[in-house]
Image (cartoon, rainbow, N blue to C red):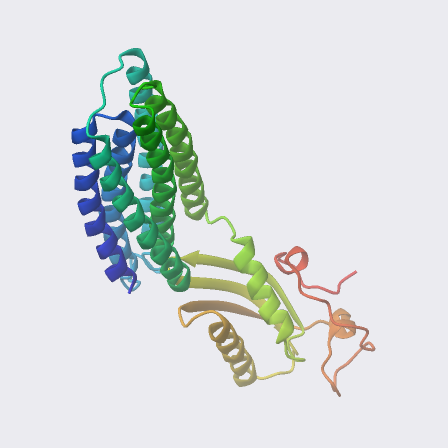
Length: 325
């Protein structure tokens, strides 16, 4: 599904880029040129995104035991860089236009083309963001966010051209002013895309996703799950990796421990997706954890049960059993 959607985005970017270039050729407006430059970024990012989505969908192999999902981070980083470069080019062109102004032409035709392209970007962007979140695809989300930003920026372009039309082009400096505002928005968008991509490359924890996982585990914990710690959640494309240490009663057999691991895996998959890989290390409970253990009629209890420890972000990530001290 993400591959097909990204393919549509890539080819749509080609059509819209051609339309925007035609609008610039007709009008000679630097504001329209800024929108066209954004179209170049959309086009390059669209095809790079298509490549990365196809690559990320490949199953893991000997050389890539965690799959190919990080390809999406690389592509998004390239996209963010291109967006920032486009913003800098827009600033250069706007300043050049202020210093050497020229007559604008065929603003009506340019306005209609830009408005139609902006509407297409908005609809495609909304759809891409929704599908990206549904399929946990960073490339689709990034592409959708970029298309939406492009659509919102087009509104500023439309306003600027409309003012020029209403004033009979008596204030040509407005063209450059709108372009400069557009450049700031563009650079800010590029920074956000680049920042998120670099965070993914560095395996920065997605605190929102971690909090969701912890909430599901806390609400559905079983009495025999004495403790959970050293929990790590990383998302590569549509594949979620979860590592954790699960403490079980020390006297349980291997078959019983395997059953609990499968129960934990089924719980996670039922709330998120089937694209989940769990690496669970089993720990045996210690006497000092009896006060945290809610197992009824435990034959090996050394201390009276007091209360379960509520699993939270601040206590579940540490690589240490709870209850000591």
